[in-house]
Image (cartoon, rainbow, N blue to C red; front, side):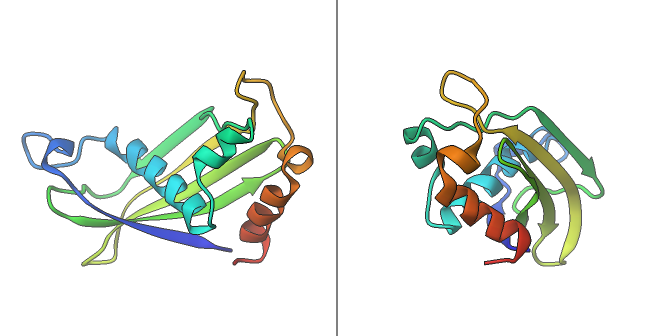
Length: 141
């Protein structure tokens, strides 16, 4: 199973008065993870959109184990947790780099839709992208 690691340094504006990352920022990091996941495969979200395909979020969750703090370097480990022609789920581990400590785990689920939000089967409309994603899900890259 292919996993992509994106590295981010916690910015001051992402923290509260105690220097701890505000919980909603983890969802922003999930977006960074999946965007960079696609980029690591040689494509971008923009290319999906140019092909009339969107990935709206229909479900998201995050379980927090330990807080990230200002100036920590974190790794967003992203992989595909589920893939069908009409839907994909990404799974994330947020890890503190210097301690290799698991800070949080989460997932986001997305249907493949057209730009006007109608469901689409990516297996049929963009089979080369489906095959690339399926390879990541099944065999690794």
